[in-house]
Image (cartoon, rainbow, N blue to C red; front, side):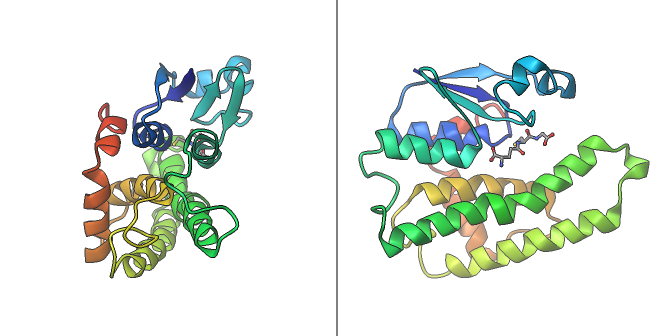
Length: 203
Ligand SMILES: N[C@@H](CCC(=O)N[C@@H](CS)C(=O)NCC(=O)O)C(=O)O
C-alpha cells in the first residue's frame, strides 16, 4: 500500500493527484507540520531536512515530491502520463517537471518560508519582491508555453502538468499580479481535473 504523508496545501498534493490520475489506491497519513515535529528524530528519519512530503510504498521510502511522482509513473504507470524514456518528448517532459520545482516553486517556497519564519516586522519587502519577480518570470515563460495548446507537452496531459499545477497554485496565492491569460486558462483546466479536486479537497 502506498502511504502519503500529507499536509494540506503542500507538495503532497502532487503525489495524491498522481495516484488519482493513475487510479492507484493510497493511504493518507496526516503530518504535524509544526517545526518541533518536523525537527524531531522521528520525522528526520523519514525526511532528513524536516520537510513534507514523504511517501512509503510497502517498505520503500522517498522524500522529494518530484521523485515520488516519477517513481509512481515508472512503477505503476504502464506508459501513462509521460512520453517514452529516451525520446526528445521525454526530455521536454523532464524539463518542465524540473522547472516546476527547481526554478518555479523555489522562489515561491522562499516567500512562504520567509513569512513563516520571521515576525512581520522583520520580514523584508525587498527580498519578497525579488522572489516574486523571479516567480513572475516563470509564470510568463509558462504563459508562452501554453499559448497554443492545452498542456505543456501539447494536447496531452502529463505528470509535468501535475508538477506545474502545484507551482501555479502557489503562484496564485503569493504573487501580486493575477496570472496572465494563457497561464490562467491552463491553471483552470488543471484545477478542473477530478484528481486535482480530490488532492486539494482539504485546503
Ligand atoms: N523539493 C522538495 C520541497 C519540499 C518542501 O519545501 N516542502 C514544504 C511544504 S510544501 C515544507 O516542508 N516546508 C517547510 C520548510 O521548508 O521548513 C519537494 O518537492 O518535496
